[in-house]
Image (tube, rainbow, N blue to C red):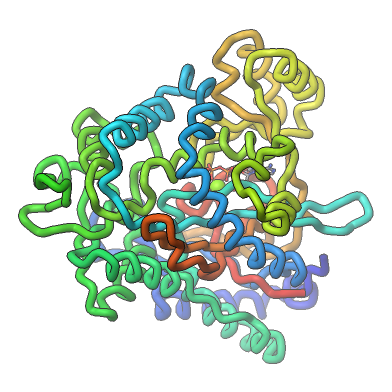
Amino acid sequence: MAAGWQDVVQDAAAVREAAAVAVDAALLAGVLMRTGEQPHASDVVNYAPFTLLPSAVPQDLFEQAYAVQQDFNLLVDAISQNKEFLEQTLASTIKVDDFTARLFRIYMQVLEEGLAQTVFLGINRSDYMFDCGPDGSAALRQIEINTIAASFGGLTSRTTDVHRLVLKVLGKTEEASQLLSNNPAKGLALGIAKAWQLYGAVVMFLVEEVQRNIFDQRCVENELWNRNIRVVRKRFRDVFEQGSLDASRRLFMDGQEVAVVYYREGYVPQVYDQQNWEARLLLERSRAVKCPDIATQLAGTKKVQQELCRPGMLEKLLPGRPEAIARIRATFAGLYSLDEGEEGDRIAATAIADPDRFVLKPQREGGGNNLYGEELREVLEKIKDSPERTSYILMDKIRPQPALNYLLRAHSPLQVSECISELGIFGVYVRQGQQLVMNKAAGHLLRTKAVEHADGGVAAGVAVLDTPYLV
Ligand code: ADP
Ligand code: MG
């Protein structure tokens, strides 16, 4: 994959000038984050970290990722309605992973009571890396699909203009004109608006206690206000204090009915104390459109991803859709179950012997949880004969071709880094009863990090926002 910017990367004076322009452009465009020191208010803000230069992305793989997104929307929606599949797939995991077990208990409780919800809204982001083969060819490989709180669709709607300006400043006007427009914030808002329209009442963003990434959410929120849709921001503890259901399980917050609950919180165990679990249960029991409902959150677990890889599994979940299945399967990397038994024993031994071939993943989201190399070997060595190993899955490690870039971060020196990128495609769908009324790809997100970091996203302080430059 051609890096493309060799000439400018080495020109220190040009880079310094372009970086100054870039930072001001990002601030003007609203590529913002609250600071680590003052995460509770917007008096002091900074630019969200981003690359100086857009990164090369192979056009064919970019198009492949867009082309499969509606298929992934269908698949996630199908899994979320398939109790037998979720039960079987998560049976071993919930014995050892308390967080997944608690989510699963709510799922079962809601099903037993009978679903009050009739309109379903999914917003997901399927993430990929470009695996570089021995002959230099690149292949699209899915890293994971995020079915809850997939972020940065807002801020990334504003990075393209910044990179266009940078390229112009660097004398690359022709290349600047080739950057694709991208507006996931609008795409996500249109999905929320559709669900809202089918229900009425207000939209509630379920947000974190500490909202450093508030501007990303505001981008989506303001798209809704622009359409005269009322949005309220509430935390789990507000739901605990103010939330109630009426006899037909309509959700009210302080007397105001809620149509859509858009979770930007709720995917890590640390946020749940007893009250917050009760709040989550209340929301799930309600008639309101949860984005996602708890079944769809479970559909996004690493264990589900691994089971999808088994021969015949996609055929069971998407009967009569061989073309969609072929597109989906073409993006899969090798994924392996560590369940107890011979199959798990064999792959555990292989990974201990050759840890650099794999990534060891627990059932967690948000970056920084996976294990690599020596650490992978040590952990697997320790748990290989215990049921604890079933809380993890193994995945083939993807090896993208690095390229040089500058990662712009507030208070950090300007230095060139060897970088790799991860492409995310946002998907949005709405289902009313059994009828799919929207199914779309809603834009993309490119995140780039220095090669020395094996793991971690933008919020974790490792990756930065980027824009694809198609080659
Ligand atoms: P999370 O839910 O924490 O985001 P991911 O599966 O996305 O978990 O992994 C986090 C990060 O680890 C990814 O953004 C990517 O940088 C890296 N990573 C994950 N899986 C692989 C893999 N198979 N090969 C190489 N890097 C990976
Ligand atoms: Mg991820």
